[in-house]
Image (cartoon, rainbow, N blue to C red):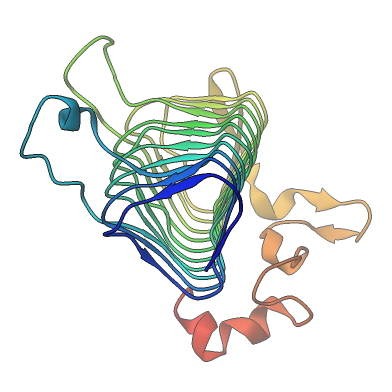
Amino acid sequence: MRFQGNYYVSESAIIGRNVKIGQNAIIHENVEIGDDSIICENCIIGEPESESYYNGHYKNPRTVIGRNSLIRSGTIIYSGSIFGEHFTTGNMASIRENSKFGKNCVVGTQCDIQGDVVFGDYCRLNSHIQISKKCIFGNFVFIYPFVVFTNDPHPPSNQLIGSNVKDFSQIGAGSVILPGIIIGKHSFIGANSLVNKNVDDFELHSGNPAVKICKVYYVWSKENKRPHYPWPYNFDRGLPWEGKSFDDWLKTEEGQRYA
């Protein structure tokens, strides 16, 4: 464990081997940080829920950050959240309580995750994204800048309905997803779309309101002179099938878990 400058680490926190902690970081009670992780300057890990200010018997829920994670400066992670190995944030991300992320996920700069959400493995969130409570995401879901997921069908109300995005789907920049929407696997939402209806597997939807344009197979790459979607056949940077074909990877023991 390596500390750099001023910091606070609770006596109940469990810090793995070769962890680096930057200046002014705060590691609250009941936090676990896996081996070889980096917590940068001015981060807060395990931020207590608001109840802690009023309840003298409050006990901070367990917060876990998997090994080889990188939490960049200014990030706040609330208590009760669980992150798999190789988790990465951009600067000043805010992740509220009871968020669950699988392995190899990225949450970009100034993202606002409202808590009570679930992400699978290898999800990538670009910068300035807002995810409302109760949303569920599969594996290999990519979300681009300024996307907003909403959850209140008649604001303001006490009814929160999260959306469900299936494996390998892409959500284009500036899109707004209304409450309770189901977006099927390998689907593609065009930039600046307002999605108010469910999207089936392998479909491209775009517009305000979004409508079905076509099956994704008809979106061609001028560079490769073939269909660009499903995208794993044309993009592999930083992904488990990098350097091999997507089909060959799907036949491996790891790939079978996502097939």
